Length: 86
Image (cartoon, rainbow, N blue to C red):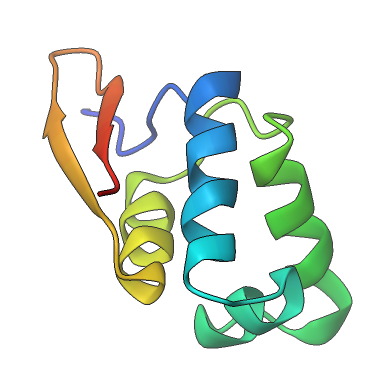
């Protein structure tokens, strides 16, 4: 079965944080827009942005980027993600 989880490097985590900040969103606002509950969502976004979630679901990353108005530049075989934020 093919995994729908992506390798998520610290550099990618940093870019996600930049995208959120460029969108003018707090971690809590991003979490709410993603449909996470308040008790869990802020902590998850925080961990994601610090690179502590090593293999998040690809849909989560794509949704984060969409909410922030950013997009992926492309994917590679391992699902390493290239970013295009600007």
